Amino acid sequence: MKRSATPIRTIIGSGGTGGHLFPGVAIAQELVSRDHENRVLFVNTGKPFEKNILEKAGFDQVSITAEGIKGRSLWRKVNSLLRIPGGLVQSMDVINRFGPDVVIGLGSYSAGVVVLGAWFKGIKTAVHEQNMIPGITNRILFRVADRIYVSFPKTMERIGEKNVILTGNPVRSSVFNSSEEKREDTFTILIVGGSQGAHRINTVMTEAVLRVREKEKMHFIHQTGGKDEAWVKEMYSASQTSSTVCAFFDDMGSQYARADMVICRAGATTVAEVTALGKPALFIPFPFATDDHQAANAGELADAGAAEVIPEDRLNGEMLAEKIEFYAKNRRLLNEMALQAASFGKPNAASAIVDDLYQLAGCRKHQRKKDG
Image (cartoon, rainbow, N blue to C red; front, side, top):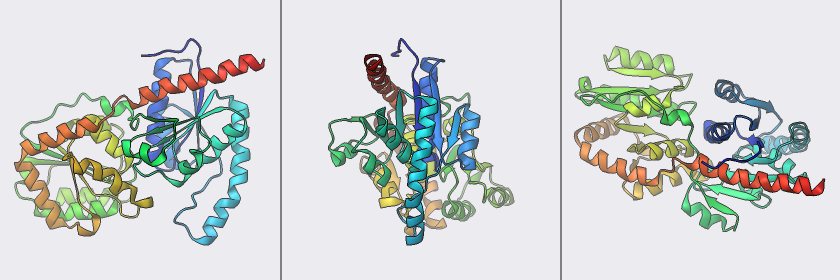
């Protein structure tokens, strides 16, 4: 593990969804594990989800004004554009007060203005692209960032910049930490619809459970999101199906440890977690994701035999029940998928990024001394 002779101060622009926030948490965890005097500040839009996750993780945060543009009505787009100058001024004020050595953006709209603010002030900047297909914020920031970190090899080809490093997508330390032991006599399925759940997956899953045979040999771990938790829990109970149901699991490492397979969306964070842990997955990409990036994320793994992909428009309870029964009876195939999934995993992504952030921060510190 590389260490810096002096602590560094880092601003992380991330949030909006778990896909943008969790990699930032992983980077922050790696920074403070290297040196307890390192300082990290998150900049986001202050959504309750963001505040809750960061408070539990123990990181400071400030909120600024920022909204998305793509996929919105004309009026919402105009309103979002009008907010950019205010968000930029707020970001530069945060930068002035915190005094970062380096600023990294994780692709959210709040990351856009804070990275631009750092660039205007001559502070070293980096961006991380979690998905196969870069989002609009990062496509803009690629032109000004000192460093670009990507999760997929094909993304490097799309960008074509010299300052691109293939690091993988950082995974939170809690995902790797678990004291759970797998029960070999039970086939356990983990259902994850993303950090805020997926209503369509929840609905089809409840239909599938009613059709699955030999449920007494199975256990279902289901992260539902807040809106669906109560009725999904009631369904498992009414059908006398062994289950663990929760709106959101703080101890994802324990849930992954118990799982023989994962049924999930194909957001970048979920893909990073299942590959880092070597878990076979049945991906159901969110069909309305920007530029259909979830299908692209899952496609490369499926092509290599590391996962299976079911488009949502083909999904139904009968099909899903058949898939669960098939994999329950074909453990060897699951093991082969797990090995292939692990070959895509980059569990040291956060470490690789922090190594490079130290270099960028060192350049900044050297410049400060020279200027002084």
